[in-house]
Amino acid sequence: MAAEPERAKVIYVHRNGEPYEERYGMRMVVHPRKTKNYEQLKNEMTARVRLNTGAVRAVFHAHTGAEVEALDQFEHDQHYVCCATERVRLISLAKGATPRKSPRPKTALAQPTPSPEKAKVITVYRNGDRHHDGKKYIISKKRYQTMDQLFEDLSANVSVNTGAVRRLVSATDIKTDVENIGDIEDKGSYICLGGERGVDMKNLPEKLRKVVKAGTPGSAGKRPGSGSGKKMQKFGTQTDKGKVIWVYVNGDKHHKGTKFVIHHKKFKTMDQLKLTMSNKMGLPTGPVLKVLHYSPELPALVEEVKALERFQDEHHYIACGAEKFNKPAMPNKLKEVQYGGGEGAEGAATDDDFLNPPSSTSAATSGLAAPPTAAADVPEPEPEAAPEPEPEAAPEPEPEAA
Image 1 (cartoon, rainbow, N blue to C red):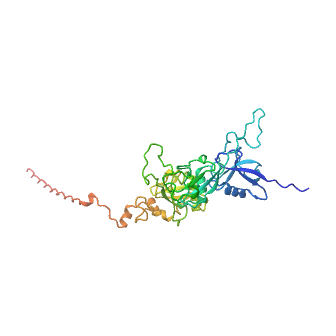
Image 2: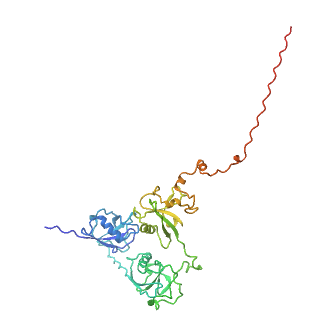
Image 3: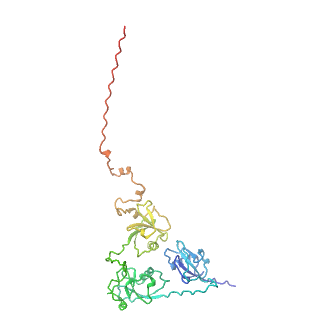
């Protein structure tokens, strides 16, 4: 009798730390013909789940918290949490949701399962392009959790002329920005903006001319301080300036540094910055796990940066993976760094200068005259010799009496 073929297992995969309801999750099929080993399944999860902290290194059961160590430990129709190198955070069920195939108590009344929220279909237009016909987008909480995710998708598909998409305004109210996913209306028309001040009314798309209300060109967008009773500042004085930093690869002597601009609108968390560094720099040891601030004034020359506010403008940093700071193979560019007097200046401090400070003998051999002291300027007078005492005359002997 022929052996029965092994059946495929259907599992649901979630990102670490993200809240979810039981009916949500990325559906994956585990079959021995398709997936040969556990590492192949982790690579597939990395490509589909797209963790912000790097590649998938470990998988845990969503309810029990047990780590899955082999391919045959996956159970059919169960939920799992993907992690990189961070600590796993088990996901609690949303209010009203129940685990799959969990027995309901006979005494309790059956609660109605909340129906999934209906997706919204909108039309997005490019600002300043009168010939743009618009593009349809499906908005749902399963697809877009935050506005940054929507902006990233719009930047790749709509391609605003002024750069990445940073704002979204409704065609019926061009003076107010859309700040939350829940504020988007079904079957609405929206305009994508980059770094410009507002909607270009002169080059408005033809299909929006009847929809857009009359407004002053360049007046769209809710600016900081609007509605709070504060007086608006002039354009150019209220824009926060980003911090420009230079990042080097740890252990690469010949690395010339990569320029990054730290701005609160571009990077919300430290993990976003590390992910961007990992994709742009490509460390040989894997993703960027820590960033070290280099300064000759520090006792150990480097110090780990754990928050975006700790970055300083025009300073130099080293990107590391899981390895330690490689001091012997420090980039040559960093040896010229001198925050007080600039870079590349003559007499710039090096690593040996902090380990071996110049002594008095080295200053004499280098040709530098030592500063004169007060004792060296005025020669001391020689002491006068004391006069020798004259010898006393011996007394004459008295004659003896006869």
